[in-house]
Length: 199
Image (cartoon, rainbow, N blue to C red):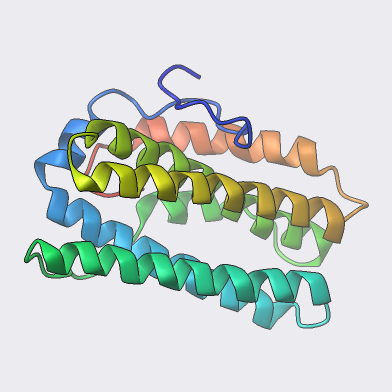
């Protein structure tokens, strides 16, 4: 996993982001930060959607409500950094990375729930890696500490989704399915061109 920033809580990623992404991200930091803001928005919406789909799963509902609040707080923080630098929020764009990963989800039943949770886990894991890389690259800028701190949070979100998959779907091979989806995720990351965005 060359290029990954080590964190024992994130163990699913098969490959690091190919070299050059950080340079592209920093070359248009306003665009990268706008994409990050939209990613936090989508994470909050995804948590609320999962809560809405699984109302009888009491623990999952409570955790998704808490996660949505945290993601919205992160959104507000990113927007604050954009405002402080006089950068407007750019329009949202389709996320080719997430779209490609979600096409591998199974539909319905406990398998569908496992895949929904594990795809969310992998997206959080990739966010952890990308925000860690930004934090390191911006070490001499106030944004460096901000992104390093957010990366720790993303690692925790990854663990949350994996743990939920194991608890909520005890009859499923969660570890095996995570490995399968992680292989697909690695291929997506290696195939997509570098852009000034988090995913």
